[in-house]
Image (cartoon, rainbow, N blue to C red; front, top):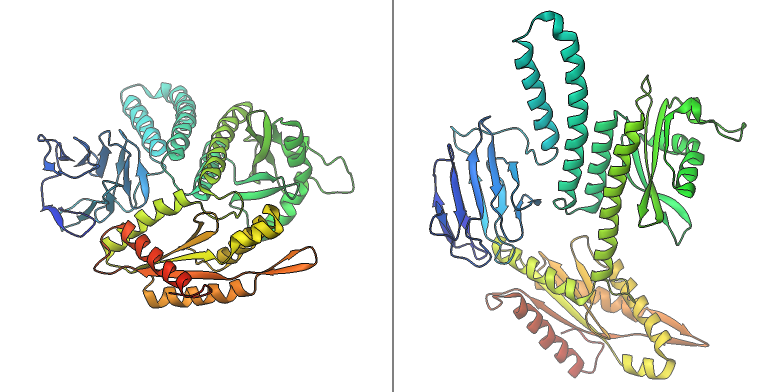
Length: 480
């Protein structure tokens, strides 16, 4: 196994092939570490790499400051996860150190990384192996009783492990949609359900909308969820769970279909709550035979619903903290954070990165003439125009009272110039009504791109500001 550690500039900090069997190797800044890194953001004992008793390559985070990121998945301080040879590990968010493990002919690896589910599989496997050992040491007449106990033990272990999985995932999965999908996966795993949907209430539209869905075919979702809509509405309105065989829940309108009519045998619907308010529902059903939805299902799904609500609330808080309230685009704090991340990534992979700064021309005159309300309306329209022009990896932000910024990863100067010309053309077509008058909007644009001279994120920003100043000096409505 070859270990290669580099910094953000590609400088090699360590290269070698230490043994990862036994206690493996510890990486950190301390003198007692097997691999010592004297870099900012590296703790005294950061991580341990070793093969476990089952032959899997594992990484344990030894109380790092912020956790360790492996292929985009965050391992929390103190946790152990199995990893693949060849994975990419970020040891420090600040300096973007990287660790590259390269498999050799003798390395032992697994087919898939086992970040999730980790506790569920390993704990169930441990229980079954333990009962198999006990079974080999007792007379056969006790097998039936032992099997019943094993089944109950496995069920309880799966429930507890699933709660651990989702709790761990709350702090480890950065993608909000993926986190909701994973919560549904765990809920299905524990309840024995077949399909699951999570819905949130849209206050603007006054209705529940699907935000995550698992195992529903396109042909099923419209009919089956429409049939169950009266139960979903009842759960959301009352805040009470609805769980049991579907024949207990006939549609009060006898002319309409009920869940049982479309083959649904059991349902479980629990409310999602934020403090004392209902914000959505978690829905699970099955078309398999038998009633899998029990009183214990109610308790487990309430736990999953509570955990999902935490994730939803956290996402709302993050959105509020990183979004400009007037324009709906990112705020300056988020932009500076992303600028640092994307700049370091561009340095590491030797990719181009560009930035566009734009000032609205004579915006103070618009505010003085038409008032702040109209001024805010102009900003909203400009923000909407910028959002429509961004690619999936671009970022647009409000950057001051009358300024906007766009970050363009993996984009050279020529590409940024094309983007700026499109923005300038779209801006010239932006019109805002103020009574009987129409306000026309123009802007001055400054472009900067990475070069040999840009060694830190602030260099890119200073170059863009210098270009913007030049565009304003030329009379505005210019690109420099």
